[in-house]
Length: 295
Image (cartoon, rainbow, N blue to C red; front, side, top):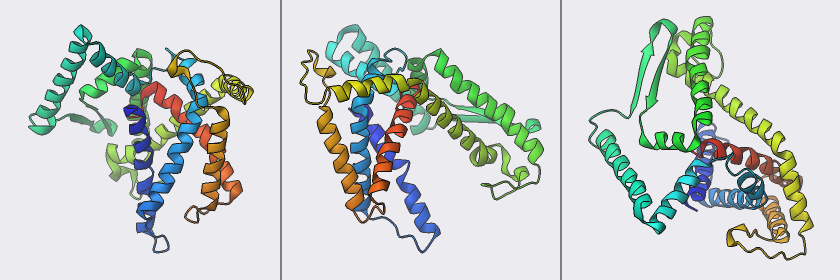
C-alpha cells in the first residue's frame, strides 16, 4: 500500500507542474485551481487502480520472478520481517539504522557529498554517481541483469553520445537547447538531449514489452470477461479480484465524469480515447516499475 501510494503521488508530482509552467509562459493560460488538480488526479488514480486489477494476474502472478518490483518487494520484506521477528528482523532494521546514519552524516552533517562527479575535458563529458544506500539496495533487488542494462545505458550516454554531440555540434544550436553546443557542457548536453534519448528508450522498451506480453494480457481479459455473472470461490484472500462487472461500471463512471466536467475540455469520444490509451500507458509503466522500480 505504501509503495502504491508513492506511485500515485509521483504520477501527479511529475505532471501537474507542467500546467503551472504553461501558465507562466502565456497570459492566455490560467493556473489550475486546487480542486481542478484534485479532480484530475482522482480520475487518473481510480483509472490506474481499475487497470491494475486485470493486469495484476498478467504482471505480478504470471511473471512472478521475472519482474522484481523493487520498492514493493522491499516494503513487503520489511513488513514480513517486523511480523516474524528474529534474525530476519535484525538484518532489516540494522540496515535501516545504518542507512539513516549514513544519510545523516552525508546530507545532515555534510562531512562528504552524496553526489560526486568528475569532468573529462578532452572528451567533453564526465562521469559520477549518487552514493546512496537506497540505490545500492534497489540494485540488489533488481539483480545483475537489469542493473547492467541501466549501467550500459549510462555508459553509452556519457561516453559515446555526449562526446559525439560535443565534437560534431560545435557552435551549432539544436532545439530544445537555446545555446550553442560548445557552451552547454556535459550536463547541459545531458539536460537538452540525452535525457530525451533515455525517455525514448524507456518508451520503446515499454512498447516492445507490451507487444510481447499481449498474449498474457488477452488471456487475462478473456478470463475476466468469461467471469461476468459468475461467482468463483478463491481460497487465498490476496488472490480475490474485484468483480469485472464492478470494474466496467467504474470505468464508465470515470468516462462520464471526464466528459461532463467543464474543467476537462474533452467530449465523450475524447474521454473514451483517454481511458483506452490510459490502459496501454498503465501496462507499459507497470512493466517499467516491475523492472527498475518507480523511483
